[in-house]
Amino acid sequence: MKTFVEKHIVDLLKTGDERAIGLLYDHYAPALYGVAIKVTHDEELAQDVLQESFVKIWKNAHKYDADKARLFTWLFRVVQNTAIDKVRSRKRKMNKEVQTDDSNVYHLQSTSLAIEHMDLQEHTDGLEDKYRVVIDALFFQGMTQQEASDELNIPLGTVKSRLKIGLRELRKLFGVLFLMISVL
Amino acid sequence: MSDRVSQFLESDLLERYLMGATSPMESQEVEYFVAKFPEVKTTYNELQENLENYAASYAVDVPGDLRAKILKQTKAKPKRALPLLAIAACTIATLFGLVAMMIYNQNQELLEDRKFTSNLLENLNDDIVSNRQMLQSVEEQFMILNNTATQKYILKGNNRANRLEAVAYINELEKRSYVHVNTLPELPDEQVYQMWASVDGKLVPLDILKVTKDNLVEIPYEERMASINVTIEPKGGSKEATKANEVATIKFDQEQQIPIP
Image (cartoon, rainbow over all chains, first blue to last red):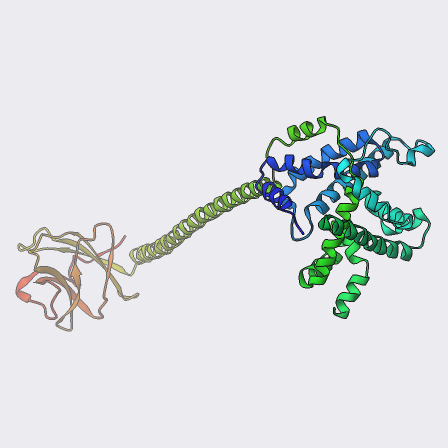
């Protein structure tokens, strides 16, 4: 269900009202920055990604179709694609430089999780790792299902079923959370 | 829930669509199902919400200065590609239109020129035909005049028309006759000079006399012409000669008969 804020932001975007960017940033920047970090594994690069993504979002606001996707889904795809492009571009520049073991490890040493999202983090922690790695590979690493199958060394059919079940599990986890919020 | 919807939901199309990993045809299929079946739409919305929540669970505080940088970069209004393309398309269309109009105008001018040239050629052809006919006529006249069988007769008016002066050329072999009128005294508008041939004692009308200056005018040839007579007749000529109005006559057995040299 679309929130009032989301509708308002979409209206402002459609009319080219600059206030849209401020509102977009205030409501979505932490989540989108988190996506950028998960894809790039590099805070500095993730900041570039976020900056570039917002410019793209602003320039292509007229292309957004609310009937096809929620605003966040569209924003997520812009950030995800921008981040994947940046990572690929950086990899090309490194000219097959030997990667250290640490380079593939996701560290968040100086970055703190946004406080208001801590509850969500707790709930996603409830998601089994076998589903999490598949969802992360497909949504945050920009892999195709085949690439995820090769990379994670699991059959393609298993990737598909884990994606499906993982997303369904998320529905359950968030369902409980929203139920709790509504009770409180 | 219909089998079709169940099959669709069991496939991974919706999940892949969410990931942006569907082909254009698959995307169309998904969009059709989302628009047509409420249960698909609900599932799709749930997936989107889950993605948002899942991503939000990894939300990270953004460094403070980034907001100002982004707002500064997006200060100008978004420039849509469409107006630029539209302007380019309009410019090209206008140029194309102008060129087309120019070509059309040039074509019209060329058509006009062609029409004018055709008319000119037609007129020139007519002139050529006319000149040929004239030349042929002159050649014929020249041939007749040079023919030894052609006789020349000088017609002079009497006291009623003493300024009348004409020359008649008669060729009995070719059976052709011509007249060349040098001068004619003026007559009232309702009167003309008419030429007659005397044949077997009767005057046969030949032609109305007019000043011909440099040209010979062929007149009807009559067999057994004994004389040529000129009378004054009412305008349009008469069928019967008015003998009382005779102003000139020449008899062929007289001495005025002068052979052409």
